[in-house]
Structure formats: C-alpha cells, structure tokens
Image 1 (cartoon, helix red, strand yellow):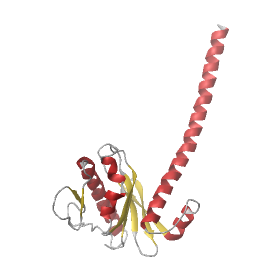
Image 2 (cartoon, rainbow, N blue to C red):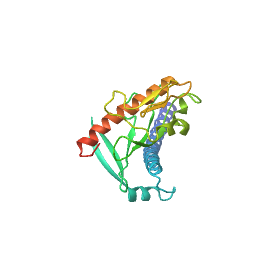
Image 3 (tube, helix red, strand yellow):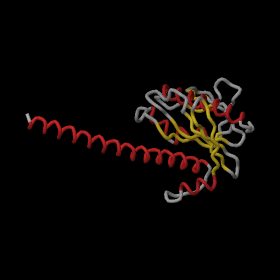
Image 4 (cartoon, rainbow, N blue to C red):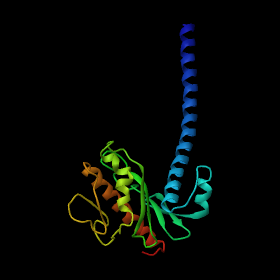
Length: 207
C-alpha cells in the first residue's frame, strides 16, 4: 500500500513539474513567435519602401522611417505602416478572409499615397500545395502586382485570371495549375483592400 502511494505521489509530482516546464516553455516560445512575426512585417515594409537595413538594426531603422497608426475594426487592432518620406501605406492582408485553398495566406501589401497603386506585395504565411499553390509566395507571381491599379469602384478591385487576352490595369495572370489558390488570393486581397480603404478614408486619409 505504501509503495502504491509512493508511486502515485511520484507520478503526481513529475506530472506537476512537467506541466510547469511546458507552461514556461510555451510562454517563452509565444513571446519569441510574436517577435519573429513583428520582424517579418518590419522587413517586408522596409523592403517594399527600398529602405536598407540589416538584422542588427531592423527595429531601429523601422522606427526611424515608418509611422504606425492603429485603428480598431470588428474588435481587432489593425495597423497602417506609413512611410514618412513618400506617404506609401502598408498593411496586413488576409486577416479577415477565409484564407487560401488549404489554409491562411497572409502578408503585407504596400500602396502609394493614392491608396490605389500597388508598390509591392509579400506573402508571410501560406499553407498551399508545394510546387502548385505554394507558388503564391514566389516573386514570379507577386511581381505582377507591382504598379497594378486597384479599382475600388469595381466589385473586383484586383483580378487574378486565366485568359489569353492582354491584362487589364487591375489584372494579373493566375498561378499555373493552381486556380483555387489564385482565386482565393484575389478574394483575400480584395476583402482586405475594401476594409482597409474604408478605415483609411474614415480616419482622414485621401484616396
């Protein structure tokens, strides 16, 4: 009986200590994950604005060149990242969308001060099929958006299509063999753009 009680006590103590270790590791990891997410956003915003930085001065360069304005939408705190020199505005897309074909697709899009002309687009997170939808993060696909005109008066401000006709001012070619991901990417860009545009205009920005 005593041996049984000792065994239960040992199991309980080990379980308790293990739980404490896991909770501590989770807290430390969560903080590091958030720091890495911030670093990825900072890096994308600076790269889109052709601002030079390195791993050692990323935060300092970001704070020296970018102004962050926060707004609340549907209970979420959203951020505009504004270049103090030329007025370019960056924000996270894919926050409100169902995501890509297989999971979330999120990233940073930067617009000129007219809030219509795309400066650059970066994908920070995707779970699409490698070699197919996974190409959504490749520059070959994303570079098509540089200089594109978002047309807010249309139901589809930006279009991702598969056709033989010349692309319109707001249109790019879809990813070959990944129509589902291409369609989802168009949707999440348009959903995000319409929401952020309304927020931008309501806080006094100009379209």
